[in-house]
Structures are given as structure tokens and as C-alpha cells.
Image (cartoon, rainbow, N blue to C red; front, side, top):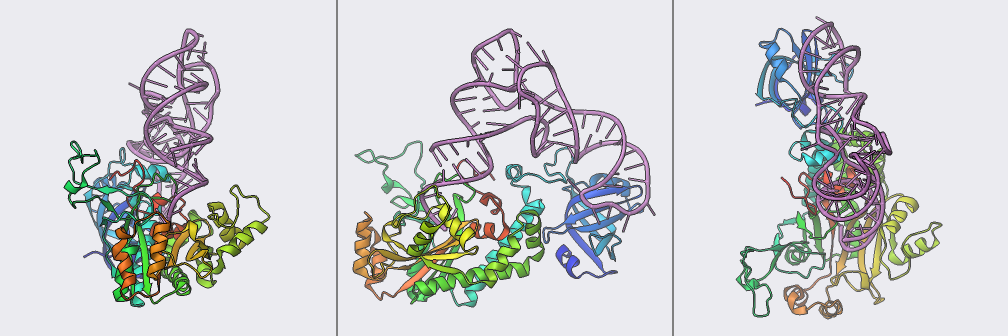
Length: 462
RNA sequence: UCCUCGAUAGCUCAGCGGUAGAGCGGUCGGCUGUUAACCGAUUGGUCGUAAGUUCGAAUCUUACUCGGGGAGCCA
């Protein structure tokens, strides 16, 4: 059993005997001795190892201990003469598991562009930034589960393959095992999905919300946390074809409770990550975005601004700023409008609610004014919409009408309507794009750099 | 999908009609405490692909491929 480097750096004492295993990040050689820094991925900071010339096989070792090589080092901790670390490891025995030829190893001990790192997705987790991102990503995921579990929410595993194409959230990927060389056709020359694996056309899920609603109707408070797929041809720094989404759903809850949960949720996640990954967050603040810590503390310490869509339109109309897209009641808010509100006007997350029913989904609850629905979006500075949620329409007749209004067939959603027919209750929930949360948290500008293996149009390598 | 910018050494880039450059990296040598180590030497290229203009193309034109930024769709 070896020691984790993060534990050594945080609480190691001089004279302790330890063994570490990891990968060489860099080596500095002098006459008769050398320093190397080793990372095992547990922390941003490496452990400095001192290699003395009297080590067994020193000359051979020093040639092979290049950036990228995997090693095991046993030795004694000593307090360091150097300024950058309190403690270092005086090596007694070094084992090399695998060398990394410096002529061909793609990672150099210098800064690489994120674009380049994306071309070497199998090695980029070994870099400082991607390493820090992955640790923060993990801390976020843990915090999400902790938050909901502490509140008594049940984690629901909603299906990844779904036959319902009426969730109204963008293009779907079809799942098939038909012979693509010889696709069966019907008499009218359409693809005959009755011969497909499920006997009908099936897709990758675009949202677990409708299924989460089913489960909320028996367990009250539930959440989903899993992968989601969109076949949109979106080429932006904020979109992925495969991303993770968090979707709580609460029975006996209205739009107020929904907003309260969203705010409490974000505060909890930020606080938890700051507690668990202070070094990584410090790193992002120094090297990626100087406002990361300020933003995090802003979220934790201030209450979110809450306004209605109508108030948002009024504020935008009064803004002494030209917008490229028109502002008018009934039109959706554009990126520039959301950014103005969150970044310029309020300078903190805001929650906008009660949007015109025409621009929102069929399942959102119709307000008494008959013009708006109980939808709420949390808009964050720099990212824009990070959470989108609503109180769901629980009244059978109104829901049926809304489905028809939006050109959908009620019979396709028979089970969804059944939930309103039998023991319906007011309920609400929201969806949070997990990668956008990690982006917001770390200040990383491209969403492809906050997921280990990004899938985007024309890119599914590894 | 649209707009826009880009693709030159392993990486980051300069060169923008006259035959290829820098920094970093790599290699070799030097240095008892380095930490983006330092000092000296050295290595490095079908200039994204294809066609065209020209005496001559990395440089101009067109198409394509891939990438960045912005927009739409959205999370």
C-alpha cells in the first residue's frame, strides 16, 4: 500500500517513511543529484523527490526518469530547503514501471494550449489544469449526491434508451441494430422500425424529467443524475452531444419551492467544492479566471435576485445599452440579454420566472393570467442559463389542451396524462447542466475541457 | 447550421511573391538545493489537402478538411 501525495503534502511530517506511486512531471538535474516532481493525481501540487547520486543505479535511473515515466518511490520525508514546498521525499529506493521516451512523449514540461490537449485526450488528464478540473468535477458530483441524500431525495436511474420522442428538447439520436446495409422498408418506403430491436423507433434520452415525474408521484422527492444526449449540430463552447444532467423533481412543491431549492442547491455545491478542493480552486483563480473565487463567494453569501420575465423585459427596455436582438414582451431572452441582466445589472445569479407560455414547453404550469407559465431560469454571469425549471402542469384538462396547442398527440403521452388522472399533485423540478456547472465553477471557457471524453459534432475519438 | 478568424519544426508562433525563422522542447556537455532551474552547443520542416495564377507560391485565387471565437438551438 502506498501513500497518497495529497495526504503527504497536507499532513506529512519529517522522518516519516513513505512510499508513493505516480508519474514523473519534471526532473531537474545537477551534478551528483537531482530533483523530480511526482504526481499521483490526488492533488494539484506534486511531491518533490530528491535523488542523491549514491542511490543504487543512479546513473541509469536518472536517464529513465523523464516526464511521463511511472515510478514507485520509497524514502523518508524531510523538511525542504526550498521555498515552494514544506516537505519533500528523500528517495531510498526507486522503481520504474514504464518509461516515457522524451523524444516522442506528447506532453512537455511547458504550457500547452487546450486545443492541442484535446488532440491527446488520453494523456491530457496528466496536466495541471485538466487534473484540477477532474478533481473539481468529482467534488461537484459528490456534493450533488450529498445535498440530495441529506434532504431525503431518492436517486432515480432513468433510462438512457427511450421510445418517447416527445420530450421537446432538441434532436435525438436513434438507437438501432437494423442492418444499415439493408434497411427494411415499409410499403410506403419508410424505414420499418417494427423490425428493429425494440419493435419501434428508439432514441437516446434527451432528458430524464418525464420519468423522474413518474417516480416523484410515488417517492415525493427524487433526482436524476446521468448522461443525456442531443444530436443538435451545435458548435459552441457551451454544448456537448453527450453531457450529464441533474434533475430533481418534487411532489407537493410549487414554483417558489423550486426556486428555493435551486438556490440552496447551488450554494451548497459551491461551498462544498471550496472546502474540498481549495488548492484547485486557487489554481483556477490564478491561472484561468481571476474572478473564480469572487464568484463562488458571491454565490455562497448573497441571495439570488428574483424577478419575473415581465420585469426583465422592462429592465432591458430601460437599459442604456444597444442590443443586437429586439426586446419585446413575448420574445425569448437572447444570450446578450441574459448576460446583461446577470453580469451588468445585478452582477450575481438571477432567477427569472413566469415566461410567456408560447416560448416554453407544454408541461409547464399555466399561470392564472393565462398568458404565462410557472417557468424559472437561473441565469449566471458568463454562462447564461445554468438551470431551467418549472412547476409542472398537474391539471389534466389544461395539460391535454396545452399538448394539443403545441401540435403534439395526447395519446403518445398517455402515461404522462395518467399521472394527472390518478392522484395528481402539484409538483416542480429543474434541470442543471452538469458540465456548465463545472465550467461556471472553474472558469474554464470551453465545455470540452471539463468532461473527460467530450462528444461533439465530428468528434467522438477515444 | 450561419458569420468570422486561423492551419508553417514535437509545442507556441513570426515570415505574407524571390527558395524556411524564433522561443520553448529534445539531444550532448557544464553546475551540491533546484522548482517555468540556469549556462554553452546542437537537433529539427513535403509551410493542412487538392487544383489554379506566376519565370518563381508558405505568401495570391478557388474548393475541401480540421480547429478557435461569436450566433442560433439549448443544459
